[in-house]
Amino acid sequence: MSRTVMIVVSDNQETVENAKKYWEQHDVTVQAYSSAQWREGLDNAFFRQQLSAGVPALISGNSPVTTDNSGHGNLIQFPTPTAASTNVQKMEEMEAHAIENAIAQYKGNLTEAAKALGIGRATLYRKVKQYHIDPSAARKKKTVVAA
Figure (tube, rainbow, N blue to C red):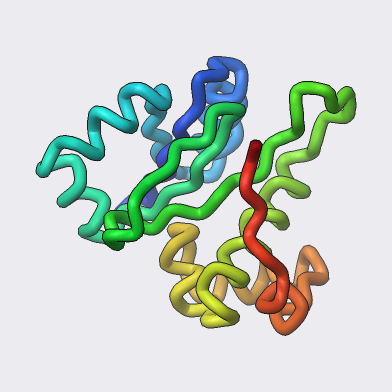
């Protein structure tokens, strides 16, 4: 069985470290890139090929990276607190938002949403139940885009 890979794009080192600490406890390999490294990578054919090979990704940080709609990679916007926010979101809340965004992005197709998140379909169904997410409501929701 292959290990799940999580790609984090952020210029905020604390965000990267928090993501690494959390996901490595769940047997997930974290690859971190700054927004500049990510943009350079998208110009590299090998890097794009790795993404299009189905490596799941979540984008995080205060400097969102825009990509073209050429289908390179499975990119889900990972919600982050705004700079003015003094409340810290729990990882469970962030995970629930990422799941809702994936379901919305894939128009309710839970199989595709699970692939994009880098988890199995059964895991997604379990987490949908755990976080009390209504897939039909999430399907109608627009994906969250960080400003």
